[in-house]
Length: 121
Image (cartoon, rainbow, N blue to C red; front, top):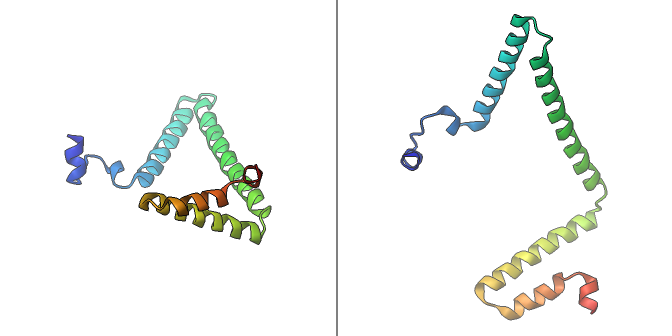
């Protein structure tokens, strides 16, 4: 049944068509429910505190990823980035040679891509 709905693009729920939008709406709804529950019951705001804590942890994790990415890119020189692009190109050429059955080219590229320590042996 799901397969038929998927193939005919008649899925029953809105979330299947724009998941990020649905996810944000669901998040806002849960946040509002937690806030309403905490204020209506006059509780010690445990549900609201828990939600705030989760938000803060997600924000910290996102910031940590951004900081790590900045640190990695700051440590790279233009030559290193160019070398990484060149190696990616060689790996692609090696994959094409493998798929076309060109063993000689594949072996040559594989030797070229090996780390220098292994190539010296």
